[in-house]
Length: 528
Image 1 (cartoon, one colour):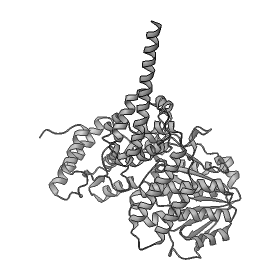
Image 2 (tube, one colour; image 1 turned 135 degrees about the vertical axis):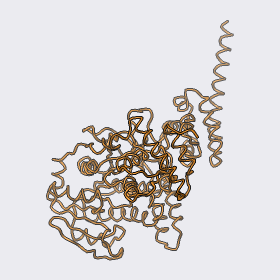
Image 3 (tube, one colour; image 1 turned 60 degrees about the vertical axis):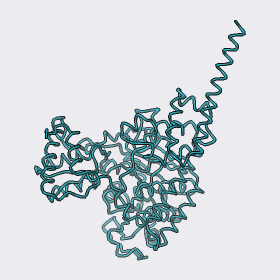
């Protein structure tokens, strides 16, 4: 056998030896071959100038502006409550708030919580920090804390942080997200809190998602947006990406190396964007001064740098350790499977596309130049409230399988998104459809229309009965491209009525074009 030397060849050999989805290999000969291939792969990366430094060197050194004086004036002498206050970001935020002059910081976390149902949570006072062991799903415990501490400002960070675990602990993930956020909103309004800042995820930028982690975050965002419009509290939000200081990916790889075990990677050519904890803190704190009453504005880091390959992270850590261990690709796990829909980004301005903001979310570069400031697309509160009530019923019934909750979550996101598309200009929807269904781009990624079936169905349904020829011509300069799209859409049986409508619009355009040509020919003949 000729020895593989290029990265692609070595990766192919690893996948042929242990196909995606296979159980972790145990055979000693297979492990020895994998170890050799992994060593070859490191050399192949090095030959291309990679693995010379930590792939996240630039991320570790990044910073964004903090409006420190304005933030300090907001928190000085105030009582600030932080849910998830003993987590990675929460604990750092608590310390920073004290440094900025907060009179008292109240940390609420379930970490030391003995019981979900304890209405009088245990309090530990450490100088200007009050630590409460309480779960945000426990309304009575939260009410006790609000009544006792009377917070002026709330940072709501409590949530499940692992997408993979969210697919296993569905009820806990969903109730923590939706019930917890509902409780926080209700108590903020009742106790006259001035501002409430919520931490979300870049995964919520997807128009539609069936993943439990991302879907629950999307619904939380909509809850906050609704509260911002109808309530008296000023709400704002941040969207984080992969938190490097608390990286489950990096930690898992490091643990396997330390234990001398085989290293499992989801798949080759998988990339993540990352940010450091100081960027996260500055986003949260800047949200205090960049918020706007009656609108849910949100902040993200503007420059996230180039995405980093998870395989490169593993190889660098392995090389740094000096150990010779095998790597294999286990396949994508639930919570990490959804492919990226390119119509999510606004390609009319390709240099300004942002991974954490979708094409319907009105965004702009914030004055410092370090952050993006955006707001959610309009949605139907009536549809949202209907589905929140349904999900509440599903989660309350402990005898129901958790798969029912996942389905209810998926349905909720789908119908709220449908309400957004119903209000979106047809030309914008058509552009999104064009960007997301580019045949050449799909082929280059090894994807198909079926990979994005749910979101494509929603967009096409949003166009039904609303597509004007003027809009069609301004988006598709060549009508044959639109006809090619229609042929592709005929493979999706659930939207055949909508596809028939699109065919009629296209045919009408062709008929009008033919009439115009015939009229021109007739006029020319008369003149002759």
